[in-house]
Length: 458
Image (cartoon, rainbow, N blue to C red; front, side, top):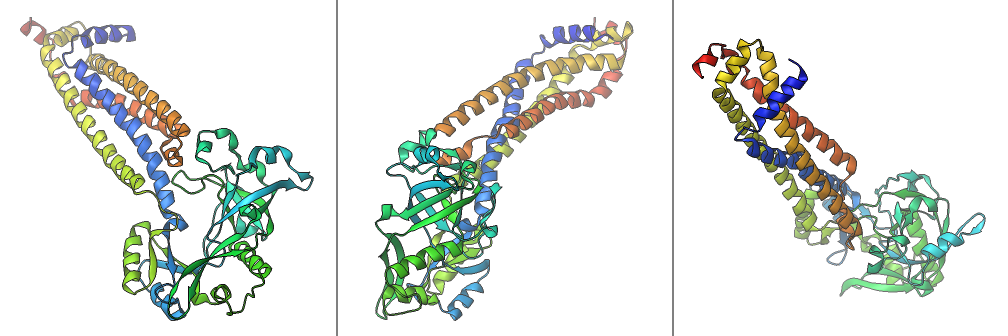
């Protein structure tokens, strides 16, 4: 049978199918269930998994306020289940640095400086903690770079104001700064603010020490990927632990303080490991509550949230999307298969005489099978086109508004087009396979219809 004849019979008969609307509607839902919902689920879950595995998402701050962190105390804490390591904070937890100048070996880079450096521009600067590593997507990592190097996000800005989130012109590609040197100072040159712990025998706690704001030259050696789950926003620069340690030590010495003395509270804090803040590194994000409870039972001061944790709402949304994806995928698929099988069985029964007549004039089971398949495929493709269009428009609109949102975390919901198109292709394949499989199930019943049935149903 020619393809034109198959198309003619199929098109004519599909119009008389009383379940055609139900098939199209279910196919629309199936396409949305395969392409749209999983696209958002994949986007969110990938980011959440990367974030929860991150070092700082598993790092709990441990302070000596309820008891000094002696060697014995730290050893007993290390023996708690699910703890990988306990690292002392030797560098900076976070420092607010004003950028004074951007330069390279040729001198000041005026174009970059005019674009980035504003009156109230600054960069949050962290040093790595103990065993922490930070991968880069371009340039060199801090592990393979000398002291006073830094790495920055791939989308970099020094304007951290709320208005800036709507003004993307202040963001630049971080790679353009690789090899450049940032001259920085703390708080516009006013002071370097350092939080230190004290214990005078009667009372313990922490206080701010205001040290001289020296100038430092940090060379940009690499770029890391900014995460929509909170890490890498704005101008978050990272330096090595050794660099952070040197910055504080130089400021202490500039203040006339001695690094190995215990005459003042600040000197005692710096020279006494048991008074220093430590970080407990948990093996898995899900074990944070357990570790916190165990450390609290031992009487030590431990933060109940990780150093850079995620919003609980993001985790909830991730779980909801995962469950919704499964439900929305299974339900339409089952209903569609049931409807298609019923439709096929109904067609065979209602059109027994017609099929018998087609066999009487020379059409084979194979020819008739293709006709019936083509009927179902017409409906399936219609459903795919409508469902695919709805999904495409939804992703376009959602990506546009999330990319323009003032909340940085909303970038978490920007769907990767390659993932979406892959899922859309899968939905097309499923839209074709399911009708064909349903027809194959009915093939045995089709073969039982004989030419004489044309007379019995006249």
